[in-house]
Amino acid sequence: MRKLFSDKNILAQCVCVVIITAFWLFSWHSVPFGDWYRTHLFPYLSGWMARLSSLAPFSVGEALIVIGIVYIIVGVLLLFLWLAGWIAGKEKGGPGKRRMAAIRKWYARLLCWILVYVYATETFHCYMLYHTSTVEEQYYHDAPDYGQDGLLAAYRAVVEKANALSGKQERDADGQLCYSGDLYAACKKAMAALGSEYPYFSGYYPDPKPIHASDFMSQQYLMGIYFPFTMEANYNTVMHPVNFPPVICHELSHLKGIIREDEANYFGFLACIRSEDAYLQYAGYISVLGYLAKQIRESVPGEIRETLAQANGLVQRDDVFLTDGQWERVEKKAAFSTETVNKATDAFLEANLAMNGVPEGMESYSQVVRLVIDYYNYEETGEKD
Image 1: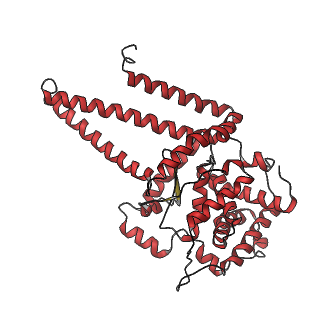
Image 2 (image 1 turned 90 degrees about the vertical axis):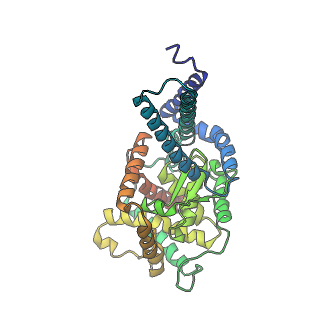
Image 3 (image 1 turned 90 degrees about the horizontal axis):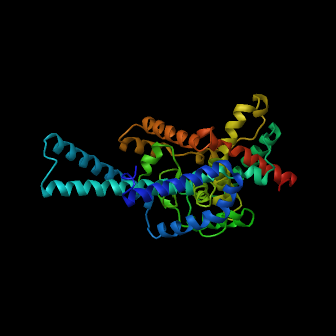
């Protein structure tokens, strides 16, 4: 055992892993600690990294993933060369073999530090944040149930607003939605405005980053992605533009310690509808319309559904992930089938959420319905902490 830890690098790595794991385990068993961490420590740990990565005009996280793939390929080649030399019985002796041994040692040492870094950033910028108080616990009395009336009221409000705003949007000659303003500035302003009510939204916001591999991202049915190891909010550039504002605000909320997907969906919605920008407002209402409509179909009797107002033609046209033309182009260029890519992504996300104490898995995204109903209940009654 003493010989194992004689290498200072190995000892340092082990100490780091123990400290990181201790923080993670403590957060699992102490919600007050998690809340304190998110409010007082997380902004400092994450803020400097967000500022650093914002210096690059591209997604640093995406670039690091590509570099990581290349690094793994190099490691496989080194392993192959070592095995070839070992089989040939020429592993020992000679300056060339000593250089190869040194390269392998350097490679393994760097790989271990990379893994420690990823573990640290995933823990401090992601895993620990799953064990904080929920929005419902903090602001909506932790109401576990909602009735049919609350669901119908929220649905009617969202449909009414979306229909009213649909005709006020800028559109091209083909009737497609477009936006001529500064989208990044509008989204950051909308998020910062939440800071007066929700303190963790105060402070610095970097620009969101477009993902270069957005076609592949579309096959995963991903609109945005948060990289904890670079503190970047990234978005899919191929999706329909109505998705841009709520997705960007969703990902920016992750940078502020809101890690649960339903809560990030909620704050993306809330930031948009409270904005002074009609495009953001429209996009915000559409971002939750599908979730509400799905819940209506699943829990409201048909005779009541028939009496509800429906989204108008413009809203239905805009409320899509990708247009048919975009899907056709993505499928034509794809190296793997969308079904295969999507299944693999879903399996990974389900496992990641389950590991962090979210047994609902991907269904947690749709739990934004609860928060939207809470919001409209507060608007009507004023019952809020």
